[in-house]
Length: 152
Image 1 (tube, one colour):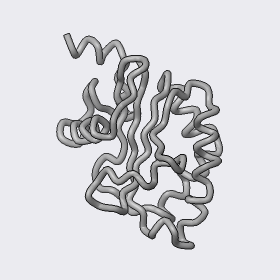
Image 2 (cartoon, helix red, strand yellow):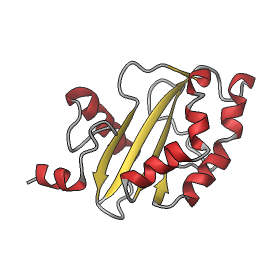
Image 3 (tube, one colour):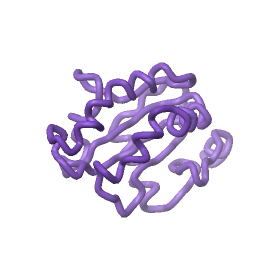
């Protein structure tokens, strides 16, 4: 099993604005860092190389990030022990607070590439029912074994 993740953010500014330029200008280096990280499998991107133009929600200010990792530790290491961490610390500068869950994790078979629709379903599942082996956050971090057992 591999760990998939979706996270969303609601931009305070148009992505072309000066106020969010530091974030936008660093998308490519941070994405390269992710792709070169141990345990990285896949990430959602469009023809430009990122996912900022993918409109998955009715609100055009909501941007998405989705990726697949071979383990929770690999994802955690990228998120919290690389330069990515510095941008997470600055998210209040660029993004509005989201009152509900803004990210979700789930287990999936090795080699499966999730669709944005599947990812949104997982986020909605988490928001509706809370943390379950099918949709969770780092707080609960259900194991792949727990997920498989919940399906039998």
